[in-house]
Length: 207
Image (cartoon, rainbow, N blue to C red):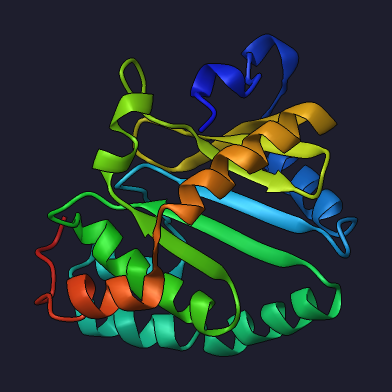
């Protein structure tokens, strides 16, 4: 398996993008990857997603409302999945999960299960599987689009999306994709993980 040092994610080689620029750049490039793959690595155990109705309910301690509102995302998720399939794009995601699950992650896993239901290929790995890679720093949050674009996704201290660093390199993209593919191959399918580790959990305590 490649190490973090092998990926070529030197900040000096990438272009920092503030939040609005990152979102616009992502949307534009996402439209150009027909017939290609997109890979995502999620490492942090807590994020904040203000403005997303299900997360807002979750953050208020309304667990039933959060799950109901997550379920109401089904039509949107299905439409996006159908468009993604029509374009020949395959979405892969590796989710690092520590136990006991944080309240945020317990909530997020319900949304990821919906995404998996509509075709996103999601696997879970534990921290023990990446321990040797994190001797100095946690793994970064990474996202590839096709064969040329990698984003190192950035969050502020509160865990809110804050932009990213963009790398436009076939070589760096290939390295990051291979790195995430190795993690994916070592992971467990989300469905089986969810049934065993998430479904039996009681509602989480409010954060």
